[in-house]
Length: 163
Image 1 (tube, rainbow, N blue to C red):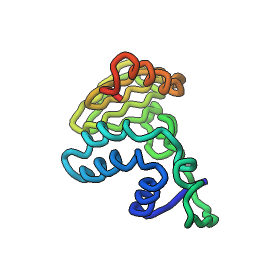
Image 2: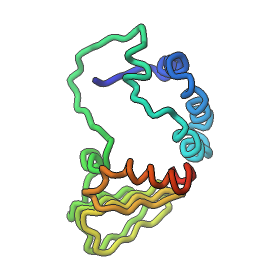
Image 3: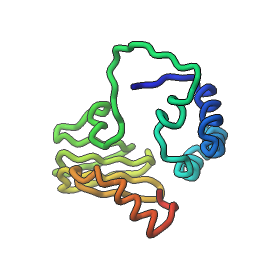
Image 4: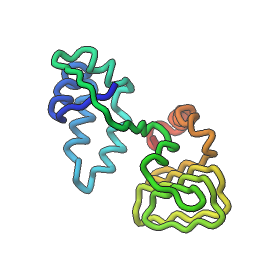
């Protein structure tokens, strides 16, 4: 099932059916398209309740209409899904960075949020490297499904600072 709505409509429904999401969403909204956008996302996104939109809103909402839509759906819930939207190089590497230099790397995914950050790698194969201002993830591409487990360990040992 896929959903489409106006921002003001989903925000109103979230306030009604999931009020604990209201403050984080309003804080994020207030800093959207500003120099503080990334900071607001990092600070407030982790405070959103971990519940699917289906259970939180859609099962309770009153004005919901279903229409048939023939379109391509991309589930961006994994690093591997990036291959559906980002072209890989001749060695099947996917790189999201302002600048990168790869030497003898194959079948790897390298990402940074900072377009001014250089990603340089040698000899990687089937690896994921994801860099953010606060943390860097390095893992074998076959282990990405264990991210939730890793995030729980990080939260246990360091709190929510790096999440």
